[in-house]
Image 1 (cartoon, rainbow, N blue to C red):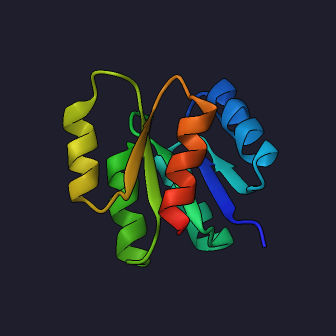
Image 2: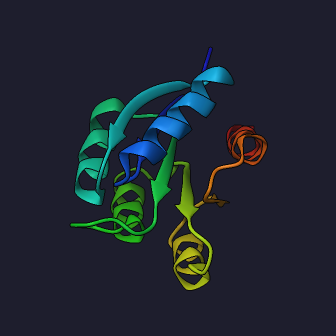
Length: 120
């Protein structure tokens, strides 16, 4: 059975790229959110196996959304997506319970390796 992923990113082209990578590699996209507020609501609704969470977003950033998702479901698997130079925020996310992080721009092999590792 394919793993269901919730994609969270404020940039539509990033969601499209990630969705393309996931679907070509046997993952199912359970939903897409463009900010942290939507991410938390959608997580509760679709209950995905994994979340790919952008760090910097309007309304509620990825770290805050991560904390809310973990408070709702302590077993949630969340992979943070960050651009270069966001090390401090990545460390905050890891401390808040993120499993791993993927660096943008997305490298297909790296994305799939991180997801496979997260669900194994």
